[in-house]
Amino acid sequence: MTASLEYQAWVVREQDDGFAGQEATCSTADLPDHEVLVRVSHSSLNYKDALSASGNKGVTRSYPHTPGIDAAGDVVASSSEAIQPGQKVIVTGYDLGMNTAGGFGEYIRVPAGWCVPMPADWTAETAMIYGTAGLTAGLCVSKLLMAGADPGDGAVAVSGASGAVGSVAVEILATLGFEVVAISGKADRAEALKALGARDVQGRDVLNPEKKPLLKPAFAHGIDTVGGSPLAELLKQIRPGGSVACCGLVAGPQLETTVLPFILRGVNLLGVDSVEIPLANKQEVWQKLAGSWACPTTEGQARRIGRGELGSALAAFLKGESAGKIVLDHSL
Ligand SMILES: NC(=O)c1ccc[n+]([C@@H]2O[C@H](COP(=O)([O-])OP(=O)(O)OC[C@H]3O[C@@H](n4cnc5c(N)ncnc54)[C@H](OP(=O)(O)O)[C@@H]3O)[C@@H](O)[C@H]2O)c1
Image (cartoon, rainbow, N blue to C red; front, side, top):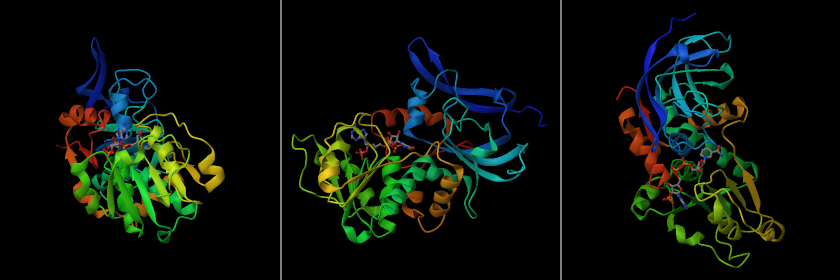
């Protein structure tokens, strides 16, 4: 039994004029009664963290709350044979940062079944440069490959390309030899997207709503991180037999489409969940990211911040202004 420890966290509280996060001193005695206590050195910023920090009850039911759906660090204590003290682990998804205190605090206590052993040669910082966004990008690519996507098929569109998921997806696809068309609303990110390996960068207007149920096929496959009407428009532009992996909803959760892309062109819409899938499936993608799917440019472009910058960085996600990968370093 480890004596309780005091630690620093970025805690969101409900106030008269909304929700706000601020630095707080917490105790490990107040963490949930799970098997593994982890000293978190790094976390990663995700759109879902911005929802939790802004009081979205679909993500976090009650406050005060410490967000952070991603965490990496050292195991301090464990009552599970599977995970040993001193081990380095990655924890992403499940309930972390939703209704379980998350990686924006220096400690978390979680079930052993949420902990992935750190891939060899990776630091906690490297793991959190990828974070849930990188894991999700990897899962999207895996789904496309399982559906038979091949670099020889032609252009693969990535929507929300400058975002956390989109930017990693661009680099993995380019590494695998796919011709990537990055679709982005940020003209000033075009060079950064090309540095990640995008062959071409197109504005969001290529996915503006059109009345026609089918459009000229422009892409062999797609990875959609935005949902809503841009996803419906992307489906209209996929070549016969192509696939679209869909993981996000920043443009809205509704999907208004006809069945025509599916029944006339045999297009596959592939759902991607990174949160509740079995740990072994997450581990498989983490190993690829630490190996042949590594994204050196993403790693080089990542921005490091301390807890004091969380408020402004998360606000940018809600405005669609965030770009690339942002890592929270608890030592800054
Ligand atoms: N299924 C899962 O397990 C899973 C896991 C992780 C994330 N997600 C979801 O994936 C989505 C992306 O997450 P993220 O962390 O990458 O967020 P993000 O960094 O904010 O990226 C989203 C990107 O989408 C574009 N965008 C923003 N608002 C838009 C709008 N109204 N219409 C069209 N495009 C818009 C922007 O890119 P451009 O300016 O380049 O267009 C933005 O950077 C979120 O919905 C998130 O909840 C799902």
